[in-house]
Image (cartoon, rainbow, N blue to C red; front, top):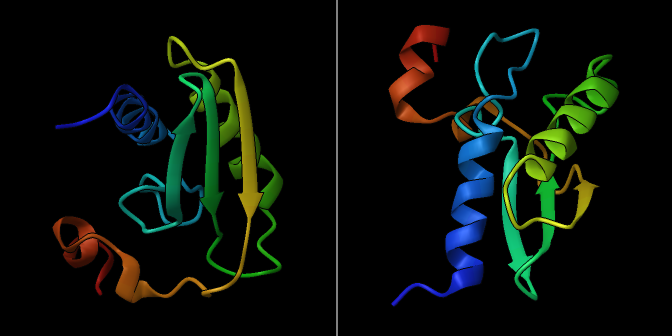
Length: 104
């Protein structure tokens, strides 16, 4: 059985599909940039994510968009976006549904 926090985490993950990577033109969830979405205490969203490269010029934009989309989910009162490069992003993380569109 799914808990309320898990259900809310799924809603946050779904909302993050509206965040489009400007370079690849696909959403950050399907690109594999969102490593974890955890909701605790019924209102605190912690998102662990990465970008395609450490020096990606869109990092600030993407991170802010992820935070904004998480905030848009009803019930979320606090958002903590943690940027990591461990493990580093690779094309192998792209969802199979869109990998062909990107030539991977």
